[in-house]
Image (cartoon, rainbow over all chains, first blue to last red; front, side, top):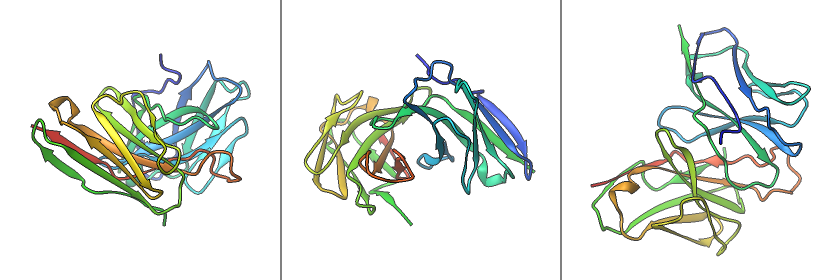
Length: 110
Length: 118
């Protein structure tokens, strides 16, 4: 019973923006959109989260549609070190566990 | 730099052995978690701990137990290891939700322990 849908893989040229989409049409009003990534053989790493406004930090930007049914993670200038599996997750503020789907495998190439 | 460390990156054990996986965090976090990650199954929660000496079962607690005697340390125990417990084990920690913070509910993960049970 997947709550988010992501493409299984994407490619991006180094230096270009990587735009990773996520659909979450059944999102509840109290659920945040979180993004994590997992570089090969490492633990997942938090990237960014948002509720309904667009967010930006030093790693990425998060664009959430007005109806909150989809979002896009933007890595503005992808590097080879951004090659990883990116997970879009819905979570309430107090929820304990993270439920990772299969994510999007982003391959950044020269 | 905040850190979650796990005692081993790779571990090989035999069926029936008792296995201890240790996790230590230096962020004074109240909550700690143990997950396992398997291809095609994603991340699954085994146990979590709200605070010292407190524990709650996750989605797949069978065959596992945990110990949280100190705030910074959360141990996962496989009482009698079996081959179906071969997996990547990930520990995570976070602040207790509800405190004033700009990072709401973020979990910090360790590097993982890849356990093979023969």
